[in-house]
Structures are given as structure tokens and as C-alpha cells.
Length: 272
Image (cartoon, rainbow, N blue to C red; front, side, top):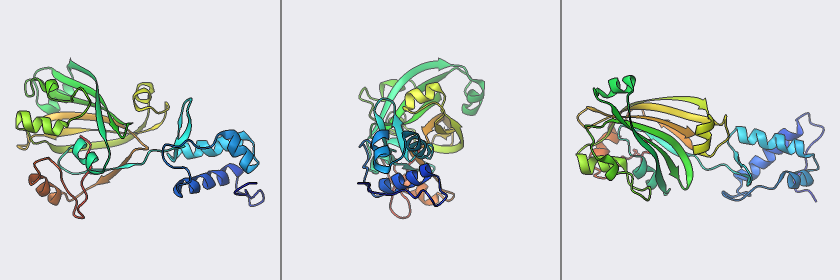
């Protein structure tokens, strides 16, 4: 017995009706996070359609970020978006953790590079140290991030951050070991599609929507200290632009952990 009927006479494509039904079930919690959705054959049998119609419905939901397909494992509800609030104080680890999520940083590479554009941004005459890493939230890849810095300003940073277990905050490491309180100078955001290397590290398909960004961070005295570029999964990030962050800045000054708070008491989620 079918739990829901499709209307073959109302002029709406069957795959579109099916995608709406599946999405409604997701919103109702019928398919909870982490649980695999029924297979193509199971959906086809339930609704009396062919598997191509089911595939069209699932493809539409995947394009919109409602579900995600894990090669060889099946189709799952998309991971919940985490608020990404742009304040002046960048602290990824503290703010994501404040929402009850678990963060992890996996270091891919540390190398010395020459990049004239970024050297100009940082006011650095010497070659730069470049950290490449993947950030995870609740075990799911969040962003592929590259951080450049003047190696003469932050000697032996790798001994302080990240830990071998992938824990620890860059914000804390700079504060505790170098007496630097990070401030966000600017960020530029744009959309693009995942290239093969992005897809591999972010566990998405090639061509998947990516939220890319780059920008400069300074010390508490306004001196350029870090240049950051990130590629984040489009299904994991929801960005809030805060145009008046005076309150957030003042609150951060009162928080030794580097956390800042919204007027409603919730914590800012930033991307460093």
C-alpha cells in the first residue's frame, strides 16, 4: 500500500511531485540525519514510478543541497548548515564549539612559498609560511583552508597549533604564545564549483557548489598578520553579514577566550 499518491493529471511532473514529498518527509524528521534514505527501487515501488523518475527527484534535491549522495553508501539527508557570523574577531574553534558541535583541524601541508600579492597584503619582504588544512565540524568536512604568514613573525607556530589530535584554536595559540589578539580586517566571498582536489578533501562531487573566500587578519594593533583563503561546502555554511559589530567587538574584549556575543546572547560563528 502506497503511503502517498502522485497526481498524474495535475500537470506537474511526477519527479517534481516526488521531490516535494521527499523534502516534506525530511522536514518532518521522517528521515533523520545520518540515516540512509530508501533506495531508488524502494521509492519506485512505493510510488509506482520507474527508477529514472526517482533519480530525477533525488538529483533535484541534491542540487539544492537538501540531500547528499555518498558514493557507494547511498543517499542521506544533507548535513545541517552552521551559522557563519562575520564579526571582527575570528575564532573558528571557540564559536563552532559554542553551538555544541565538535571541531577538528587536519593539517595537510606546511611549506615555504613566494607569493607577491599576498606578501604585499602582509607587508612581508621574505618568503611566507603556508599552512594548508581541512577543518571538520561533527566529523564532516567544513572547509579546505590555506593560511599564509610572515615566518619571521610567528616562529615555531607548528609546535603550538594544531595538536596531533587535530584540536586547539589558532586564535588561542597566537594569544597565548605570541601575545597576538586576532582581528578580522576584511573578507571577500564568491561562489564557485568544486574542482577535483576540492571534491576529494571536502567529500563532495566534482562541480558541487562551493563558498570561497579570502581575506586579511590583523593583530590588535592593526598590523597585518595572516592571509586566509577558504573553500567551504555550500551545504554546510550559512553566512550572516554583521554591518554594525561594535557590540561584538566590545564583548570580545571582555572575553579572554576570544569569544564574542550577539545582542540576543548567541555566539558569533566566524571563519578563522
